[in-house]
Amino acid sequence: MLCLLALLSPMTPARAQQELVSDPEVYEKAFFQKQCKVAEFGPDYISRIDINNDGLMDAVTNRGGLTCDGHKSTTCNDDGCPYNFYVQVKEGGYLLIATATIYGYDFIQRFGNMVFVLKMHPRYCERTDSAPCEMTVRVRGTAFVTLSRK
Image 1 (cartoon, rainbow, N blue to C red):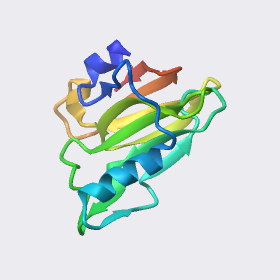
Image 2: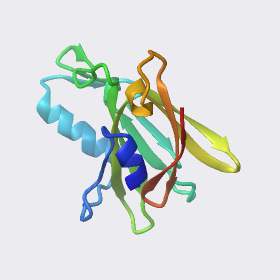
Image 3: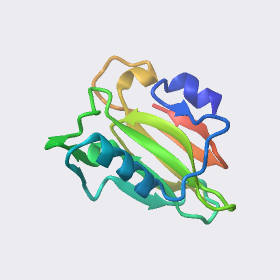
Image 4: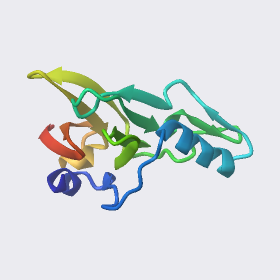
């Protein structure tokens, strides 16, 4: 996980003693409903997918799918939008394992495992052109493992 974090500064690890949440969608929506007079959540706000290949449905939230008081994606910038990555644990509940500001991602199968292709600002691949950096990562347990970047 440290390798990915060193390469991708907008991704931060969850705290070691992170508390479990019963449902990330309910948890985050309640937070924004307190922050906004009117909070609206688009269909791309949450994805329920098995991100660590353990058979349990995990969750990825995208703040780009949030409209707060009529303003869409107020937390997005030139680096993209904040995404939160949650892993469901066998004991019950979900653990926040990472937050990243990215343009988006593809979730694809490679060599029998599901992996993320994170699309982000080109500087994270040490480039100055305008094409997005693509970092391929796999989630093992509760850690991101970088497979490649271009």
